[in-house]
Length: 155
Image 1 (cartoon, rainbow, N blue to C red):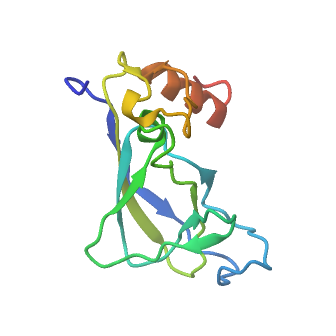
Image 2 (image 1 turned 45 degrees about the vertical axis):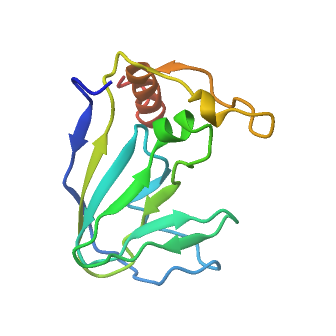
Image 3 (image 1 turned 90 degrees about the vertical axis):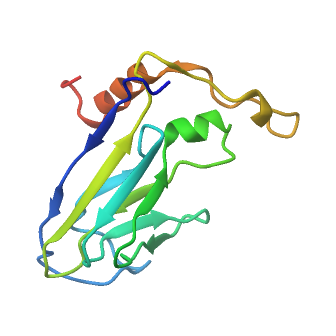
């Protein structure tokens, strides 16, 4: 499934906030650098600088800060891993909000499989307690469909 996998690395820059304020359940986010989403493919490896900005949606629906750890790499579970495991591993809903007066940089590597491969739930992850949740899909079509929702008219 990985003889010619999709893998994309990007360098992302987030401008300083015009009105820096800490994460709070009471405040609204005026300046979101990247809106809430899950990553499409298998997993994402994320290198961050020392400026915070990654925020993760907790299971109870609250945003929590994913503060950078010096020398650390964030590993996000993405949609294919969630589909293979029938939701045992959940795709991470996250966003980026630079709440500081500094520029923020990050380098994500989105790792996939061959785009012509089928993504289907592993039989060992299906049971009476956890019935099949996701129909089989073709990897490339799924990625293009998700991109089309993100950037209408481009894909």
